[in-house]
Length: 445
Ligand code: NAD
Ligand code: UGA
Image (cartoon, rainbow, N blue to C red):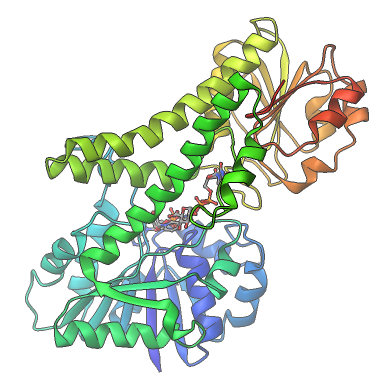
């Protein structure tokens, strides 16, 4: 039986390994983490992350060929294939602060693998890392030269939160990068065999290590760039009377452009797009490619501009001040169908409004941890959040926001009642008929 151990039981490690366990009943999968609360949650009925379909997959395999443990060293030592899926945030201090990826967690995982290993292993980079990380990892793994053969593979993950299980069941592609040596190719084949249990072989792309590492950063940069492009257009739409939804539809019909990922919004969020672009920018700068670095930096600048523009629109519409006014925030997660609020644009919007002394009342369908910020309340119901409010900001495109009784909401609000739709989820005309003043991203007023 092939034994897989995954270091890091987070948004990637948990769902990815659960799907491998489900699709490969003959493989034993152990997900390990240094965080005891996380592992305890994985071992309970209340999983630590919300992801549609995940509960069901975990239920089918947990205790059979899928296990969660804090005994990191034991399970790494026993594994044939070790996935490393630890967090790789942006560095906050020292060289490259604010841009470069912080590989502290990765390095400590690699050192631990080197120390506890007694047999040959394939070590798989699942985390998103700077191009050339595998070279550094190889050096760390072989530093104590115990005669163990380590093969490093890059197997970046492309799942999106909210659709992780769907993406893992039916990925656009699986990417595996490895050394161009016979050992490297054998390792690639071993990992390919795992995915080939459910992924069509023509969707499994095998490349060299650096292409695989860079492709992950490139994919996220291209995706984020599309959003910044459409968001830049949304500003021009508002200035000219064009409608960004119509523009997206018109350009998306061009098969070379394609219809997906063209929804104008308050800005992209999530734990990865900004971090990965900053990482890309830093790598370009390190290679003396200032023009390339500046090109990608602009994607983030437009994203920041979009968030600021949204806050300014709220304040200017509400007679240039929100001081003392209750503003309801509908949706706090960075996108629908996830409880993840890392780097959500809602944080920046709330900060902007608090800066202008607004009182904030937040409702998100996913439970939120209580906040200690005085002007902010988290409530369990959209009607409660909007009661007595002067304005509503829709910041996540949860489906349930389309189905709210907006007449009831209108009746409970101060007048004039404003709606600022940062996701274009509500029918603006219908709301205007009720009496709301509606601002929607990239739409005529
Ligand atoms: P996460 O923070 O949810 O999970 C990482 C886990 O690793 C944490 O539970 C942490 O306790 C654990 N960890 C850290 N160091 C450890 C160590 N030395 N030993 C054992 N456990 C350790 O992060 P995530 O969202 O799962 O992201 C992981 C990586 O995957 C990142 O590089 C990210 O860029 C990439 N990625 C994320 C997504 C996503 O949708 N979140 C998608 C694709 C790729
Ligand atoms: C993104 C990528 O889509 C994944 O392929 C990648 O694996 C992952 O990052 C990662 O590396 O972490 P994720 O951040 O989970 O996935 O979610 P997305 O669906 O990409 O959305 C990111 C942000 O962009 C969200 O805030 C979303 O609301 C926003 N978005 C997305 C838009 O504003 N408009 C769109 O048209 C699409």
